[in-house]
Length: 266
Ligand code: SF4
Image (cartoon, rainbow, N blue to C red):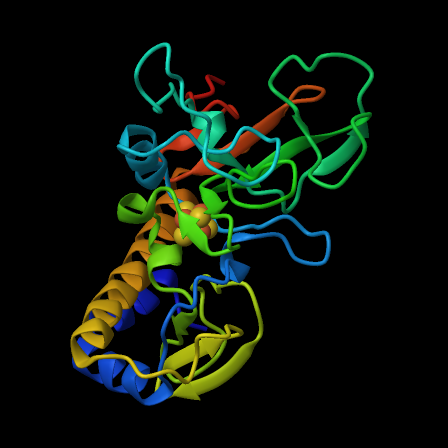
């Protein structure tokens, strides 16, 4: 069985021109349908966002994320003359829900328990988890997703969106096997070429320019390397904690954190 370090070496040896060949062969053009930014079958949108990507989104010159009342850009705060509002960590990221327990919400939590995505308001989550997911609104859609009146979707944070979003709907496998440690986008694999895998997306099969394919290929390699560096840092820095009642602890590459992104002291 390969180690994460072995996979990292494989990721660093990926040849962007070969990835671009595969992407060009499969074909892709974003139709702005929003499927990769929204909830599916009642499950909230879940996409990994790394700590520095959260900070980039916090600092990004974008309109405020939606406020939990549904999709759509925020209303203009004409009193301040600006559409920008203060964003906090929790506006941008939520703990990755996998591994967390649902508990009855009997009181306000001591360590920042969070409402379950699909449970009633009387249910909360607690426990330890790894990494962050993009925050979702009340509909389960990414908080940065907005639609215009014609239903055409857009990312309010397009220039600062995470690597997983920049490379959708593609992933790579390492070492010619599918048991890779790399993250997978939402949706089943529906096409493949070489080490590139394409996941469910209505934009697949459309013409893509060589320039765009090469840009996507470089970002796909960057993402593969980044995911493995992050996984190695999480593994090496992991210190088991004993979360309090109603508390959620998130382990990322920078250590154990509370749900507001601050470091959790032991
Ligand atoms: S950050 Fe942008 S591209 Fe990524 S899921 Fe959210 S709306 Fe979509």
